[in-house]
Length: 494
Image (cartoon, rainbow, N blue to C red; front, side, top):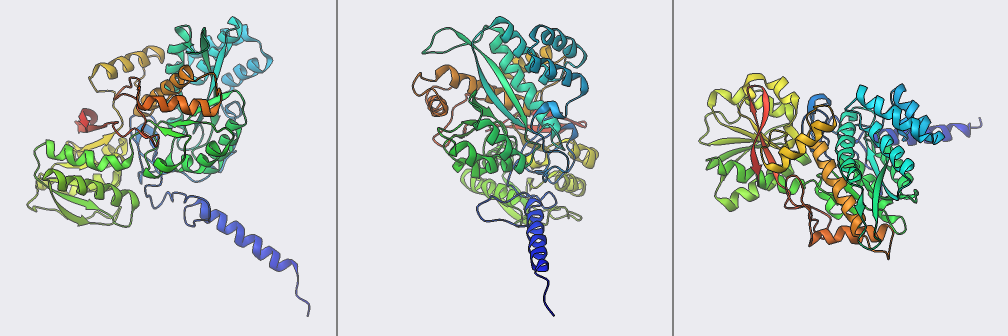
């Protein structure tokens, strides 16, 4: 009997498709591509924060509202459209139609009306700026934005847009920025594309950005995994397109390429900052709970312990498995504090179980989010976690930023993602201001960003100063405590 030649081909196609699905789920690594984070088994391949409060880095929590941390989601099962007019609310689609028709006067009027109805929607603000610039016929430069505008990380994208719009509007309302070598003020326009929080779409967005001759640099993407996936495109384009990531914290980004910058501190600095924080609050000994099978948990614990040994903080290892904290593991050990190197559920469980022993509990940004309070209840009162920023900080820069944000967005409270995106945008605009006439391209923008190494600009929590790898190693982490069921900043973890 002759064999059917179609059957082997079908088998090969099924195997290939199955491998691709496993890759997208984070269960298979393909040669030449960085691994995808498995949302059911989180590790620190990327950070993800959410929308209404402040958070960063990896977390096992799947909730994205009210500021909980999440793991990078798989590729969206919905449309992978990158143009925002494909999925925004109907009223906003009308504004995009007016832009296509170049009916700038009507667009300006309708955008004003729309923002009165939806004051927190920054997308209408970008369209409004387009109309003002076109009507005034003034010179302008365009920056790109890669943000998750659909899917489980949509609120993160919205916070990004808010911070970026605030930075852009401040410059444009002041008449624009003054190019050092050209004279005359220039205004800013923005091209926003949706990366959906997944790697495949982030690559698609990157390709669109580098092929847009009017985009000088890109703010975003959000997560470390989407950044690492798209970085080769930004680096390889000739002459390249620089990006500034607001919130990506993975240490691998340090070596992601010459066009890659970030205003978020690396996870490699977080563990050390936490150790110093614990020591500064009076502890001389601490139990370190960690899962050595999880990259985020193990890496954070290792940097914590390395710094602890330098500052005279005694540590005791307490290994555990993520999501399985069901009985006391510290109890009445002779330690002054507990550091849980894990995620929201782990810290909530440890707080419930260890509370009778009265040890203060500390955790990293992977545990930060409203889920911590929802899952831990009264037990998490007093728990201290770290994040980029919090609106309850009382330093002058934070207070001014919060007030400006509230004035622009109808009284809403900014979160850490909005603040980080604001600083990233200000750094990008400053690079445009400093860019030399030759080369006036992506390489020129990179060289301008390099000047921030020695001539930084002011940021919300620290000067914006990049090192040789595009990192901001002196960016502080913020210590945030749970007080009566609410988060409150209690200082910086430096």
